[in-house]
Length: 505
Image 1: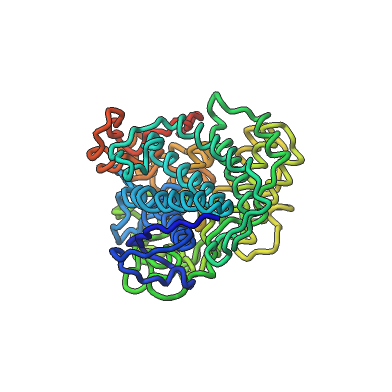
Image 2: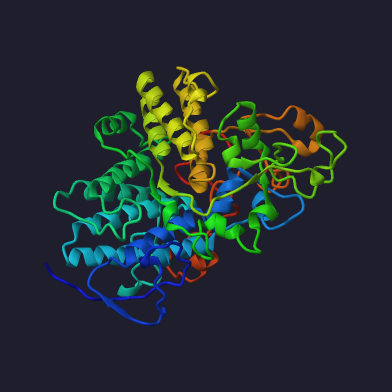
């Protein structure tokens, strides 16, 4: 096989992990010559993980999915709950100039040295990252993106529909190849330790995700998706950067744990439980409650979404809301970071069967999804499936979709915050209750709409009673691009992605 040497520029980013591949301390201006893409694979995988549960998507996804609420006596994340114009420029830059550029280099090298396994890994991760990007921002540079070396510095913007069509074409093409003789270096592949077959399973699960995301568009064909689901080999375990690569040391922890470590205290200072999810778990005796939230000394308590700076006594117990003790969230330094979780894949299959009227298969995959989520929290008992609130009930297509979506929302807490935000935009579950908390705080406390989202108290006016639906464009993406295809900046974060067509907020 032909060898190729290329220049490796080590990016300036936090590299968590105990592997030698992540302990490289190269000067970013120092050139290193290598004969394959091994050094880039772990960097790309950790970069994706860092963004999925990092500063932009980890916190925004949690606040907008109503897992977290802003502490009354702090201010760091107030703007998230006020639905301010967030562009998430760090995530955009990291994923494009960093991760996708690295994955492109891996594919180029893989082609030159006929490394089918590395090409499979890099192409699937590239498709995965592009879906995150277009699901977050909508129309973005795509077909001409990552072509600075070829002299294209102002790439054309592509419509989200065009990007999705090409991503589906790419996933079909990469999965159609023969990988019977392919291999991947297990030392650099944190996700599957070089197991090529599991990467094919990941590809199938990703294809299903791409297909189902279009469920509310005119192009969706459930019969076609059902045919694929009936024959494809999907993930049997979550595709994750495992917590075992993290260490309880500075810059080597799970990103959310890193934000809490040392004197930073972003979680204990700023984050309290949202009443939305906490009450749903509490009322329904969900055993995941004490894994997702840590009770205060007086027990579990959640705050109204976006209700900071409010000197009120909502429950009438004589203590102002700002002086109450609330449940908090804790992230272990060695938590897994799923790219595609097992519960996600199972719930996706359940929805396809539900749409086809196949109650039995929908039930089976729904229960598998709930069990996978319970297992992630170290819970073996499945009482909530057998006789509790997660027991499957045959119903209309919409009723079954709601059952699935509600459990997906619970399952994603602490693991897949941004995915939770995006999927709720598609399914519209949890639904939104229009209750005006500020108008009748005591009434809202005693008659809280358990199982529904509420509009943030401080964000209600900003989006005229709607929820966030996308990020605005990073300013640099618009101002530095001279292409005639550059769109106008979005008015706010309430602008919907093209596939977000289901009625509801």
